[in-house]
Length: 250
Image (tube, rainbow, N blue to C red; front, side, top):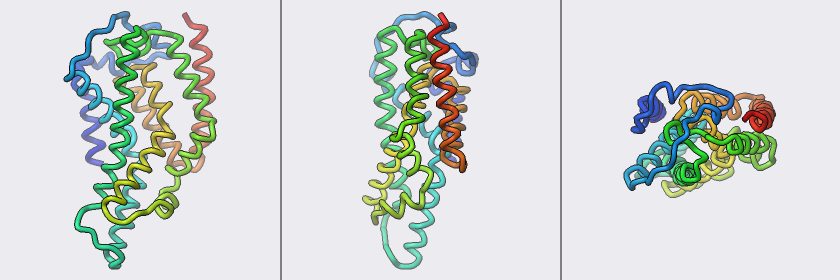
């Protein structure tokens, strides 16, 4: 919880990008109509690190709330196993589990940063808003995210995230190495469930906290509500309509 709060504070203060509050909170259905037309610049090594850190901390802020039930259940199971004498670990496996989970999102953040760099170089992404400057990019991402909400892969990954007890009992391994492996596996299922949704941040702005908050709530609803999968499908239908409308707006 503390980690999540710190991550949100970091985002709300601009994540070191110097973006204005207005740029971070602007809301519009068709962001490409309002994006600043600017050209790419050469990324320095320090800027690459800043962008990877921004993406990683943003993923922590967005995903930690929905991952909390699994993390807390793992900690509870491990404490019970220790108390009953079933295992004896000299290190904290819960920390290893969390580390494995976060390492997967770090890998995702590196790929997302590379995608951001590529889109900026091609002129499809605004430097000042980190949002789409192209209706084709906006429509493609919205349609892809909408369609993905209905695919079997999405729901197979979501099923693992929605059933932490079943996931832990099926994949449990003892000791820190087993906890790290389990955290990586859980992170992989979470990425599989949500990666296309995260990609639509390129539409409204990577650092747009309104879009970030909306996606955070959606991920929570999908994973925690009994009707979560249907919420995801409803959002998928909305994204498809939104993407189609974007193609007609010039």
